[in-house]
Length: 188
Image (cartoon, rainbow, N blue to C red; front, side, top):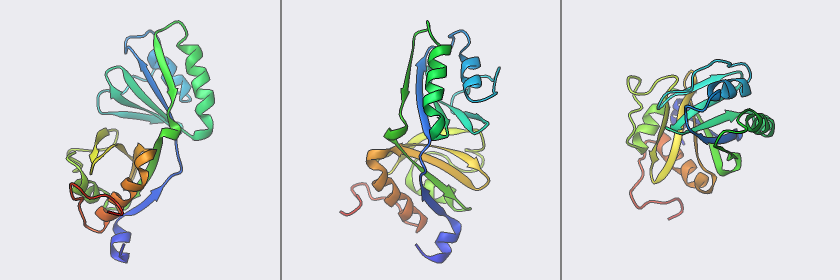
């Protein structure tokens, strides 16, 4: 990556996040309260709507599908959060799973992240189409990924950890102005 390109986009892999997948019906009594309380004081917070993420106190809840949410937290809080949610949702039909190790996390920062993502996938990542509080699931190259704006000029992105090397190569190529070829793979 040239100095100029490196100044427009910085790519950092890790550190990992604590990630908990939660599946249940959205009308489960107290679900919003359980999620908000588990994330440290978001009591009474509404569940995120389709394509959205809500965050507070170092944690976040992202909408994944009509009956699925992804909870994000510092890695060291994952076990405690799982226990608390299990207690608060006891008696309700639900599934909780720690998926932290199954996902690799990347941080893209600098003014070039939108341009790099636009080279890799079909999602509208323009300022008008993708803003703060939005959570997007899409394909980048041949890889399923999810991403959200995590700060000024900063994006967090995750994919399955089994394809993290491929994703890193895609992102580095996009930072250099390259797009993926349909049959390209790192090292091919």
